[in-house]
Image (cartoon, rainbow, N blue to C red):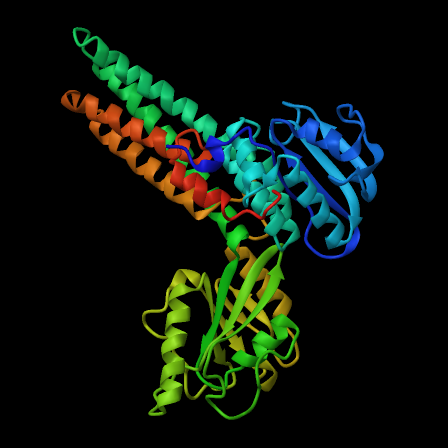
Amino acid sequence: MLPSTLQQQGEPICAMATPPGRGALAIVRLSGQGALEIAHQLTHKKLLARQAIYTKFYDDNDEVIDQGIVIYFQAPASFTGEDVVELHCHGNPIVSDLLLKTLCAQGSRLATPGEFSQRAFVNNKIDLAQAEAIADLISSTTEQGVRMATRSLQGAFSIRVRAVLATLILIRTNIEAHLDFPDEEINVKQVQEIATKLTQLCTEVTELMQQAQQGERLQTGATIAIAGKPNVGKSSLINALAQSDIAIVTEIPGTTRDPLTADIELHGMPVRLIDTAGLRDTANVIELKGIERTQQALSQADITLWLSDASQTETPQIAPADIEENKTIWVHNKIDLTKLQASTSANHIYLSVKTGVGLPELLTMIASKLHADEQGDTPFLARRRHLIALQQAQQNIQAAGVRISAPTELELAAEDLRLAQLSLGEVTGEFTSDDLLGRIFSEFCIGK
């Protein structure tokens, strides 16, 4: 059963294609069967494909609403694959609202969120990954995010997925050919060849997953928790990195109770900094609650900056035993109170938040850990659902690789590859449930 918007695919729809509010210009978009006739009623002019025409816009009473530019895009050479008309009017909300009312009175209806992109998908103008890239491009908050979303929109992600799919289908076809002709038993050499191809395919999917994980991080942003004992300079560090007085800085231990956050951009990646409560033994109920939230933040963070006071050599400040080593940077602060020099080694850095010495090196270390500066490894943006689909495909391919060595499980290996093909097809929309389509396009803004 198709969603209602797909059942009424040809029905003309209209919406604002520019943000609401006042401005120099606004664009109203019209798409669907009969769009050209409706535009003719509105402008009283014959429109030619891809020609900008200066005209007046008339309402049902033949009174002039406004004057501006109208452009007609003839199907299938349009964004939606249908006849599309764009009306460029003055950016007064009242004017655009009158245009929409007139379009509806002449046979159109208001579009639902994402309906233009949904029609483009249904008419094979874009695949599902490209459709999602449109929403990501609009919502991206960093330059690198915009560039990656543009690459996804141009098909960088889809091309990689289709290449994997093509290889998978060839392997699956080979296996099913043996199933169709059971008299010709598969020999050891053929099994080894298929097993080798499955191993190579699994490697390709793994590489694609790694890039997708980085792409998802660029889309959603990374979280960095600043943690340590009280009075080691956590609040000073978040202020320095955010270049703003986010946190109160005093010499009194335990000032921070609730986690404080600041959003910054680091090498093109959106990053959320979290200043957490100092970890120590305490009987203060409020401080205990803050420590509980600190531990929760540590478990969810992509990177933890564990601060210690480099001047306190007599009382070593040991991190919790359960802190994850591979996602931790050990920051030794307050070297201005010692004879130590700013330096870095492995995941350790010696610096002074007060003087700023070592802070640029810390940012470089964080970026390196996030791989935010390796644009070549991140050719596209990705979403959580893409990762889930790739992980499922990888598991099915690995299962097929195990089964292929047993002649009695050849049919099960073929089924594993069929399931892997379905999972990969979900990324581009070749095999996608209608409820998933509805969920995806409902996140789009109206008019896109």
